[in-house]
Amino acid sequence: MKRRFWQIIITVFVVFGLILSQAAAATSQRVVWEYSNVANEKAYFGFLTPTETGTLLVSKNSYRDPKVLELNDQGEIIWEYGPIQANSAYYLKNGNLLIADSGAPGNPQKPRVIEVTKDKEVVWSYELSSRADSPRQATELAGGNILIVGGDKVMEVNRSGKIVWQYRELLYPNFAQRLDSGNTLIVDRGFYGGKVLEVNPQGKVVWSYGNYGSPQKRGELNRPVWAKRQADGSTLVADRGAAVLLKVTAGEVETVNQWLDVLRSVPVQDLWVALPDLENEEILLSITLTSGRSVIWRAEKGIETLLKGKEHVFATPPIVLDGILYAGAREVMGLVGAKVNWKAETKELELISEDQHALLQIDQAEGMINGKSITISPPRMLGNTAILPLAFVKEYFGLEYNWDAEGRLLKIL
Image (tube, rainbow, N blue to C red):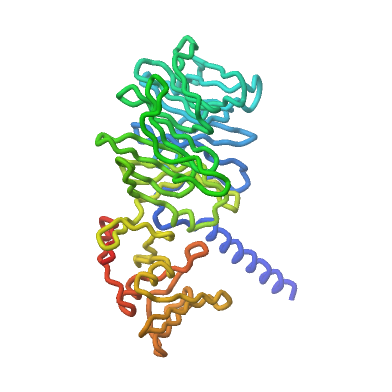
């Protein structure tokens, strides 16, 4: 009897462990690459910098053993430097690394920008006056000067440590790029919105997009983190809060990519970085899950949607799951003039139009339409949103669309 009891207990724990491991491993089907720590490591991944050789520079931030890591495409650590709580790291042309050091841990606890050799020797350093000026980014300019983003300003420092240019009228700048024109493109995430602005050498703003918003109303942007001026004069903007990559051209705004469905695929505690990889049309994300596990994900391009020939952005973006194209139930049914009632207790969807009445249940392939039983691809949940297979909406409610799976383009007619 005792032996049977312990067999049951062991079986329960094994099954429970498998469930937990499967839950921890769950990701969006758009994720094509992952690097992860362990749940009890109490570390998260900050900045991400793709290199010209295909590796990835990463800050591993923690109280115990913070480091700058260089990962290859197999997720192997091929170089590391620490302890350092770094906010950015970039390779220089001479093969050294330029690192923005937040100033912790350890003495002297002063923020600084350092140049480090691959043999881990510091060969140049610029110290900032206080932790309030902690550098969030540091990059080398064409002439060898260093562009530093931190505090409420962006400044250019020469190798002798002299400030030769600065722009201060900012709230929370986190990214800057010197343009070929000599102007500086700055991302200021602010607190309730955010701005991307172009500043000339005289400190005049010659172009901007976005606003800072207020506690009552968010701005046009929601915590932007990155921007890049394109050859055609447009500006790409990665908006972390809205989970979109935007293209801004002469006041016209187009959504180039989005990753909202990736974030909704698992319970997310914090999103630290959202950085586009333009060459591969992917998004690099560093995320801490509610389980405590931190991950770096490469997510393939999201689905572009055109509604009657014009760009359309769904609040819940369309997604492919197990080869089936889905979209948010209320949004897609609204396109065909149908009403959706959600029954939370039974996880049922009631869909009502002038001539159709359907009753479907989440994760069930059996449903009812006008009192008759049907078999369909099952409705799913994406975060807290019910999603429906578009093929079902087309067959029973008349939604007309074309789907280009290779180009990831959905045209709703």
